[in-house]
Length: 123
View 1 (cartoon, one colour):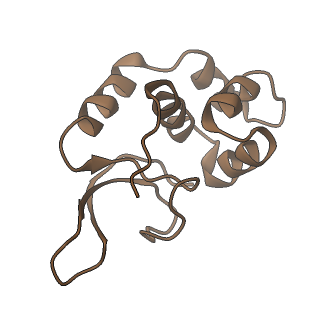
View 2 (tube, helix red, strand yellow):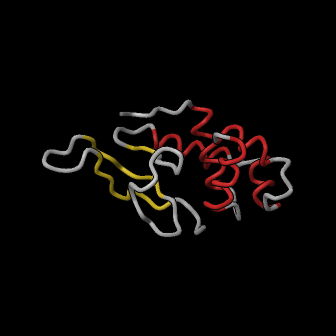
View 3 (spheres, helix red, strand yellow):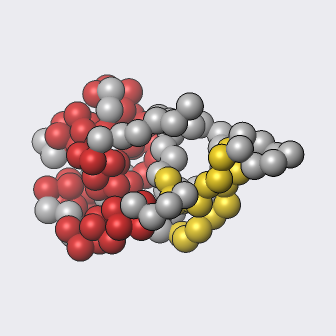
C-alpha cells in the first residue's frame, strides 16, 4: 500500500524535521496533540513548550533547503518515511533519514530501503 502525502503535508514534515532542538520526541509530542504535521506545524509556532530556536525556524524556514529536499523526494524511488507512516522500517538510532526504496524486490521484503543521504540532525 502506497501512502501519498499532499505537498503541503510533506513540506510541513520537512520543516518540523529540520527544526533545531525539536527532535523526534518533540515531533511525536506535537503529532500526539495535533494529529498531523500540518496542524503540528501551525501549533508549534505559538507553543511555549517548543524550543525557541525551533519556533524561529518554523516561523521562517530556509525555503531553499526545503525546496532541495522536495526536489530530492521528487526523484524516482525516493521517499520520506516518517514515524506516522512506518514505525520500524529503518533503525537509524538518533537520526532521521531520507531513504531510497524499492518495492516488490524479487525474493526479498515488500519494501527494501537503504540510506541515501543523511539529512537530519541528531535528536
